[in-house]
Image (tube, rainbow, N blue to C red; front, side, top):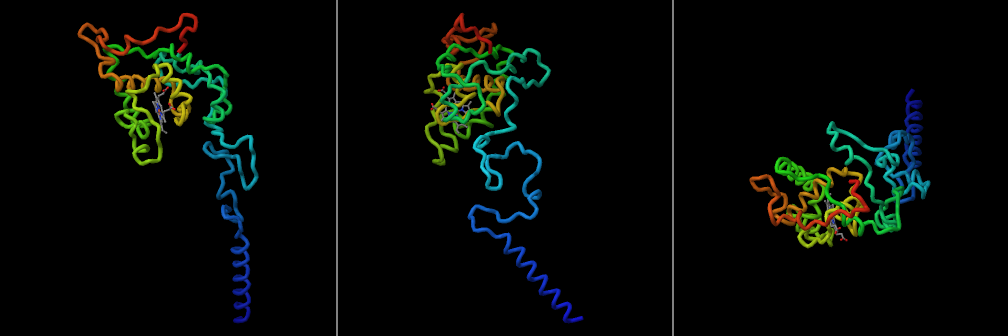
Length: 252
Ligand code: HEC
């Protein structure tokens, strides 16, 4: 009986060591042999996983892709009950520049060789400020800005967010020195510009235009203030806004 137990015990030890040693691998980045891969990797397609390399097998075509975050082309995400916002849910009519494929990873986007950023100078904010709605729009704009942008741009929009102060990041402009008109701001926020990435997958058009009101308020304190008669106060930046080009229209 004793001998039998010893034999079983040593067999078990040998089996266990074989199993443990067998799972080792020389590759420094390898997790070793996976006996039950389903426990490590979900068999279901995960939205945030880069499937460009699975178990050492590389697939160039799908590398660096935000796979399921991108909705099918020309589908329109619509939510809410405000029918006045329907136009704002339509896809942005300007296309990304072809160069953005390399610089901003805009794979799968409709690209164009035209300088759409230059053309965007004529686009105006479709969210019109009035004496009644301005307070709510500025409040929402600030909230979205603090959640999505201030880590780089700074709470005051002076370009000194914690990312910049920590030394991790540089080249963020003070909004007061930004010459871009609001249509161009939209283009840059939507597709990205220089070291700033595209925000089109995390903010919808209405949210971006709402933030732009907040940015313009940072640039000019008088922006979006109204006198007793409900007219926009003199000195507001709105007065210097370029008029939309007649031919281009403004389908925003
Ligand atoms: C990772 C850091 C980072 C984040 C996050 C970021 N930005 Fe930027 N932003 C930059 C940098 C860098 C530039 C300068 C780009 C250039 O001119 O090359 C810039 C430029 C801009 C400009 C000027 C664009 C122009 O056309 O000149 C605006 C407006 C702007 N950002 C708004 C935003 C808004 C709104 C958000 C949040 C939704 C945001 N940014 C998030 C780094 C960032």
